[in-house]
Length: 219
Image 1 (tube, rainbow, N blue to C red):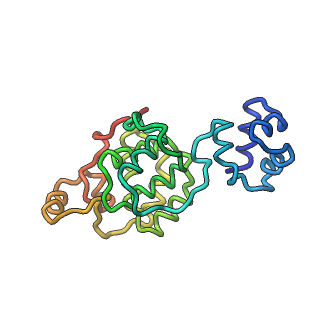
Image 2: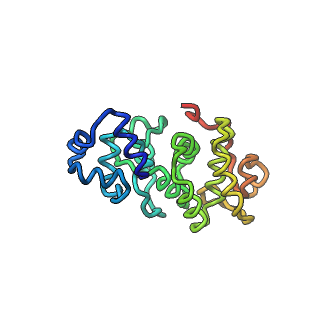
Image 3: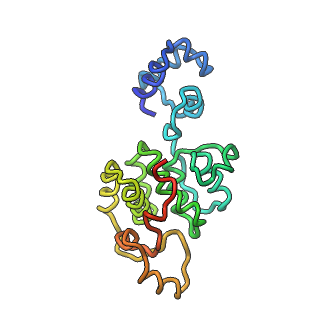
């Protein structure tokens, strides 16, 4: 978490360092070190998020998980506020949206409703750590899948602020054909080579998901 943002969050609430420290359960001196950048806020990130009502993008990013259940992914997406899973809220601890996004894209078979929610996630949390996202996506050969999600979100919501992330991913776009987090049989591959959406073809993916099919992107 940027220490300038940390101080601004306190000042915006009209709290002195002493008042904020009491709410956070730390000393005023420790909070001063956090706000000056002389101590990492990572160990206190979840408490800071709760007390200052900050978005989950302030949470540290951890390892991308390659094998998680569809139920687990649905609950985590619900915890991040996705309207499509509103009935599941309160059943999972929130994680950094960037970590969730790459975890979802790393799955061999991603449940369709979760896949549909990923462009919403990109639109909802534009302050995700872009450098980390791009670096980790490239390291895991996920840049085409992530680029597809970003393109879907940008076109569905006409959000031009996503263009820099889209361009950064395009610089390392792979030519190899891939599916969008789904294992396909031969018949499905043949059908999707003809019927994939324009956005999927742009990223060399086999998927018929398109901007007009996305729900909640404007919420």
